[in-house]
Image (cartoon, rainbow, N blue to C red; front, side):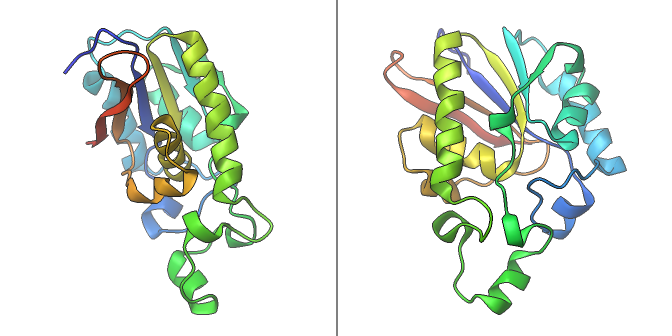
Length: 193
């Protein structure tokens, strides 16, 4: 389904060893696995026929490499605000491990010690949304799961914590856009594999 209004295409980076094992990967610079690279190389056919006024990427190598392997690396602009959630003390460990020490913990509600809370990530998402609306064009973004989930929630005017309700697989494509006019932001497609 196409739209007469600008669309924002979101690509979650390809698989890494840590995404495969469920380890929280915020600021650690983990490379793509061979499967992650192969999936990224298939993105051009999945994005065929689309034209983008800009390509933005998270500073992480997993996002930048996905962008590069998809054929968009040469024109990509790295934006620090697209970085994944800073997991602080929870970097590199799994939710199961966190729950063993902190029963009932939820990332989107409780945040991370020495890292970010949902509101912090929401402020970065809001800055990106301001830039997107000012650009008023069809833009392709490469980033990470939890950041993109907060971005989607904020796009809809929901609290950053509501990003908990959106799930993203590696190398999935999602599309943010509008319905009847630019005052009606919507999710046009989510977690397309």
